Length: 135
Image (cartoon, rainbow, N blue to C red; front, side, top):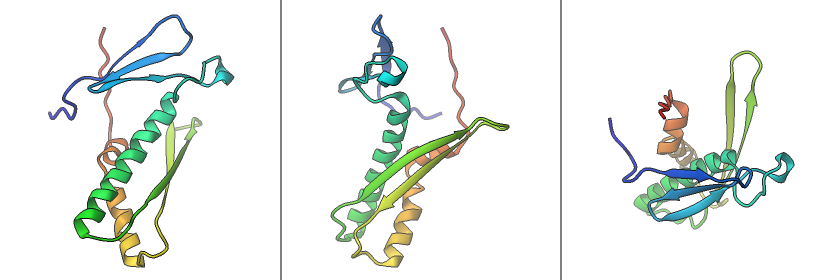
């Protein structure tokens, strides 16, 4: 088994409704829920954070590939969202739209879409996940 992180991610919540402090190896960030469900909206909600992980991984993977190929692609944009079908089998569908400059070739675009699907977070989300919870 391979552990990808050098240090655990830790989190805590106090009495302020839904405000979580998440500690990673280089600092702390907050997560919260929107005001519509009585959160303070002081940070991204868990769903946004999950999609942000996929966005960051997708963009970083594409940048590494583009730089290795020496292609002149100065900017890439990604837009993500998800829907959950709770009827019958519980299925989550993530939409990921990647925008490239119009100057890239069709072949480059097709290759970059393949590379995007190979980012590590994509692979994690597309495969079986087991969560072992202890107290």
